[in-house]
Image (cartoon, rainbow, N blue to C red):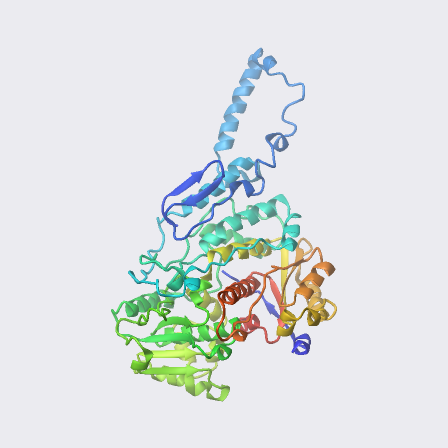
Length: 573
């Protein structure tokens, strides 16, 4: 398997990514907390922002303002000096009260920190936010798995490779990165649903608040990629990263339809994306499952069905939050809650169409059947690890319907992921540690994904062969790409994603000034079927989150080098 991956590489261009309540200020800690927010928002540590007054002084900002022999008493003896002092005092008052964006680098460090934190705080109010879609109230989750109900990924510190690289950033670069770290996790977050919220009074499903014009944003363009600077400027103006998804008309229409179906205001038309017990291997790994889920949501939209996601072995809501629709409602296996108020409790009592991984020669007829039963079967279950989104645009039976709803093959995956989910808040914070570096105009980032095989994950002896030299074609490709596309005023960064610990360490050794890694573990859910102890299940949940984070980060890099059969590459294509 490793030999195949060594022979097949492709380069893929950039895939762009595109609280409510009163706040409390703790002056001693320099952090902000939400007393009634959509989630437990960790305090924003103002003191850790760049140019902190803890590390820079007024004397350093104005080193030559006053001579060492300066005598305050002599000023008082001169009317002219008193006049000058008065003018100076007025100037300082105007200067201190000015908008930091107007004065750029001249504003004091203390003011910029306070301004940024104040902007974050004000953006967390409900004013102007989307009302959201109400989740079902009054559900009793006490009978469900205790591990699932209380699972939370433990946030890990960034790898030392990232820390070393960020220590070399200029003052401007560090300030931009701090702005992104303070705003992106908030504007990009979603709302916990299903088992992840486990509350009788869940919050409405809606995107995080737009962090409009918080801080100075990227400031004035000085150097690096103008295109990346423009993207950051738009992010500062709109409060959210720019998305490649342009055709969004279907989103509001489908959100309304989905909610009306779930509350019983419409007839029950459901498409359930499933991974059934005993079929974990058929479900595949994370990338394969996402393929099937994207296919499911696409067909749910065009057949006007409410999408529900049920992964019996790994509840999807433990890894992602919702932003527009509540897709997690059915997962209550122990409490035996029906998926819809007008559908039977047990699937055995309901007429269901089940589509399970059709073979390639049968895929056309299988999906034609799905379209044909649009108004026949109330409940469709779809278990698939097939990526059919792009393929559908080449099929005469499907292409017109897809385009009628505003889909196009270039942005379909971006639109579907933007609409459906976001990583959990803690995961978003970890992701932003890295994406805030990759997004800098002065950084040219290349993701290098190398899949070495399951054996290397469990056998250190077999992992020893995985070195930069052994997988040299990936790094040579990245070097050539950097020579061809990177600007002279950009720093080249390699984001290495691999299941080989030995390869990670060797890449850092060979390219100490270029390589960053997450240091996270990985897990393959398809090889963990059967009964598990609580500890094994916890390890699987953590490993799956780690793998999702690493995959999610790839989209923030400028270019990618990856195996021919890369899951991310398939989605991009």
